[in-house]
Image 1 (cartoon, rainbow, N blue to C red):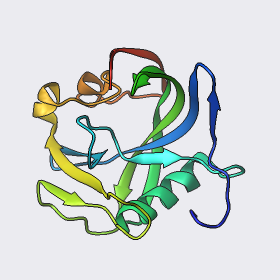
Image 2 (image 1 turned 120 degrees about the vertical axis):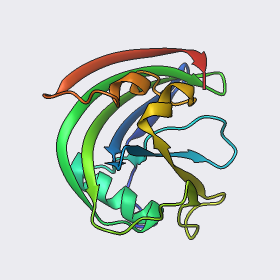
Image 3 (image 1 turned 60 degrees about the vertical axis):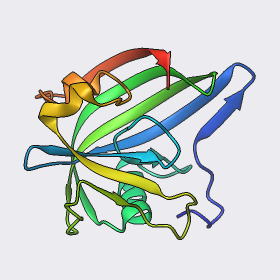
Image 4 (image 1 turned 90 degrees about the vertical axis):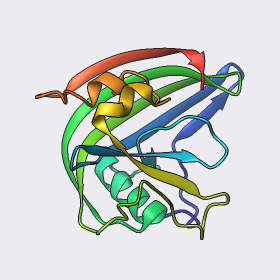
Length: 166
């Protein structure tokens, strides 16, 4: 857990940042759970960085517990994503594992709600978005706007580049 001294798997280089990320795809009643940092103007699927020596499934369980106090069941792996993008003018190279998940904890069903604030200031904002409205959402990586409409039946490898700065 954060605060235990564990090393998050992220490397900074002169040209940019390399990140190893795990992502949870939580779809319920035709809506998908997304989140963003309070000051950001774009959305992403919830998840986070793995710690050194931690499996991707365990990291996803830890991130959901830390961020919204939810216990989850990690299902099948949907996508392995090589994601190239820019944030704040800096290049990012991210490897992501995107898992289908189920929440064992009853989550708020309001359109949006705040994540836990103990370890994070400002807190993350979570939101339920109808799958039918994803095309109108500034969601990254942008392949998800279509990809979430038709989940793959087997593990898909995606190499994705977002042209615009997030």
